[in-house]
Image (cartoon, rainbow, N blue to C red; front, side, top):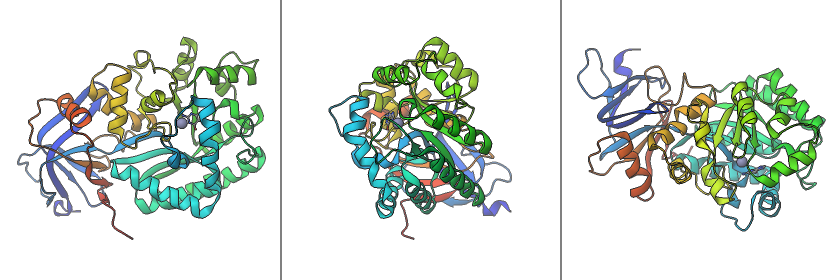
Length: 416
Ligand code: GUN
Ligand code: ZN
């Protein structure tokens, strides 16, 4: 490939480098090849041998890496904003009935299409999600492929303490999951991955959790679940597993704490549980908007500050917004911190949590050209935190002008 096949976009670049370092390049240039790999990201200056076709987007731009949402429920899309309860009653009254709709193929296609469109509108290029039923997984896979977005897709596994219409028969569901796992690995699109998603310990029997752990291990699958979100949930876990000493140990007993596990919330963990989660190398997904909405409690960031696999999740529908900038704002309301640390969690931290930091998460030579072009006003910014402050708190809704995944423009969407 000659350098003439490369494409270059000028703009101000915001680029997270680690949990506490974020580059701000006011006059920057991003260059990528036709295969969608970044070949240069840095100051816009003449560099010997650097040739590219310019991509022009009118006006002033701020370029940021594609945003990664590490925890969300596609099947709850139409239940956003349903108030009045904390976790367990909210699930019973609003969420279980909403999830039932995914059984229908047409309904599942429709909601999946709207879900991915909403994500791209807000600059999310990777969604780690829960849907329901095999129909839901197949619909999400089809619609994600059409949208060109990256995703980890699994369906919510549960065999007790939920209504009959959601309850599964473990052996049958595991056969289905085995088939789906092989389907995803056969038609290997680097953008889409299958996961096993036990809802949470109170909704799964020991037998089911054991089967899930076994299949995850055999097929090296991602595991997604909820951990220690709400105090009544913890009481339910104690009752359901009286012989296991704490909530994190329940998952560990059945082989569910792995380096490919994403644990949402982790609000009320004991020091011993935190140590176990870190020792197993699990991803921790902080969902601040959801925690505020359901009054679940405060995520104790002070215990996870130096933990590399720390990510952010919208937790739709408990979190009301698809915008990771809104989630970052709620993260700041929850814990005083540098805004660039929050951007890290929504980008590179997410990529590390998924074990994909060599390909995704920031704008570095050799990685995929996943990026979002935001509209910049004429203000001059002195640092990454200064820009983020403007984007998150002072400009109202910031719309993504354009979104690119592997160098392809995926939003605004062209009808296919
Ligand atoms: N815990 C178990 N299921 C759910 C869910 O759907 N949403 C949230 N926020 N927590 C859960
Ligand atoms: Zn959730």
